[in-house]
Image 1 (cartoon, rainbow, N blue to C red):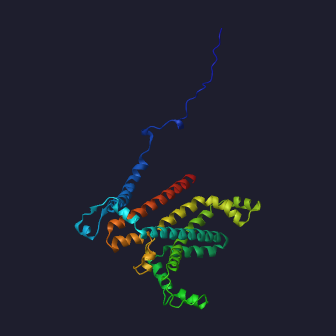
Image 2 (cartoon, one colour):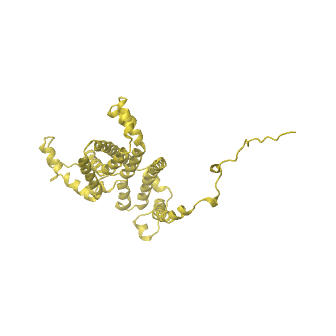
Image 3 (cartoon, rainbow, N blue to C red):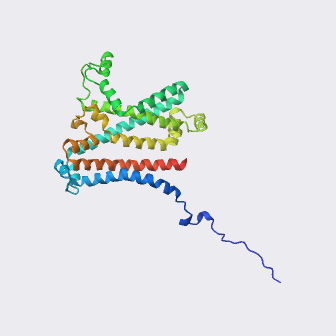
Length: 318
């Protein structure tokens, strides 16, 4: 008499997590809730960008503005700016300016954030309050203050440098020399950017596990080695985010230079935003100005892509 022996199922059913969910099981409520915001943002951003791109493909001067009708030139505006030597100078100048601003901002902000970890609570509160005050000050107000500081007749900078015998800076105009002038603008932009980056990095430093830092010190790591091999890798996503944001802001700098030079900057001080403004409203070549603006937008879109990617990575880790 045979006995039936039950054998285990060698191919169990796949778990539910491996099954592809049907569309009926998807919760569409979150998507429905954000749809109005996405539609508004899309309308506010997409329509002006589309009109900018459309305008860049036309010859649109003062006559066309009055007639409300441009002449289609296709890529003619882009060919014109690429053939213009001034455009190449502006691009190089803008990139160097952005590199100097971003580099100094990140380095100085990192040093200040590390210093805040070492000082007493009262000093930390005072420094943080000062940073927030600087950050909250409108750009135009900041530019007006710096304009008086570097005034060639009554500027306090010239007076101080003369008094400490650095040189004779009486009636010295910092903006006669573009290198000195851009030095002032770099300092101005970095001054306004340091508070946000410092506070962001300081918040990240507070999240670094203390036991990891202590373990590195026990192993004989010095302050620089601890920062380089322990702290910096942990803060890498934050460094990338603040670098991307600083690049976006500094590449499009306009107010600081335009207002500081009394709305009459020479070609030696053209960065891409001022160059686009000059072509659009200075010589009323709106099509050329739009083409320059499109180039600037494309550069910023590339940087924004990296910023969004790093932001998503940080959100996934959290």
